[in-house]
Image 1: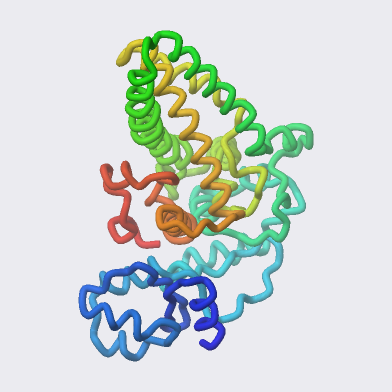
Image 2: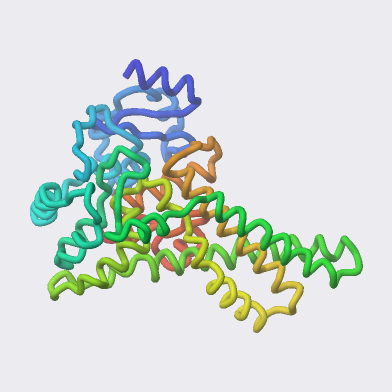
Length: 350
């Protein structure tokens, strides 16, 4: 607790202990006296909290604000399950048994896709729901063909080198049709900022993440597995859920962007004139770069001390550690709110 108090003073955060979990309550508005929060910063609130017979919702809030544990992490071998600090509940007996088998059989020194192909649907669904340990940020092999495996890695720098010139070209194309800077600035704010980044990209991000990258949510655990299908969806995104610290497998694959950009522009042209379509598409591209930058920072830093970043990072960690069927938004929770996937307690237990 002395170390926790020192951390609170140094970082300007409000943290406290419940059970063996460390909660970050910075900015939390207590429904009772706010002084209860301030007077307990850096302290153990377990006895006081339990003595008040708090509701299930209050305990859910504690889970959502959990950032660590007082218990030292056990020494983990490569490929083994990471202890879940984001959730108080333990695994079911069936799921725990699956993970024990996976701890013994998964070998991260060998290509993972052939190993995934041998899993049942039930094993695969358990496998991708919980992160596993690997020390190196470039420590897994997906494909048996090493050339293909290297080509499957991607760098945020490559995305910037493609995205920023493309954005500039689209805005320059739109600029040619404006007679005054005022009209250009007005449409830039409306179509590039509000429509492109704030609405269209956030919608694309949500749809892709929920419906295209998390197709394991539609698997039936009781039917025979299609090994090729499991390998395909694992290589698309779910390897990131299992080994989430792999730096060169976190961002969007730049070679996959052109076909989606063309499709999005075709949709925009059905809705908007050419100039506004160019501006909106430029906003979508910048939104994708913002997505990549935030996603990379969530896992590899820097840890930006800004309320929006911290809110979205906490939601993303819950998506990884608690329930991969909730909180799909990375840059914004807008469409999680619209489609009812925002709050963890509205989804299946994690």
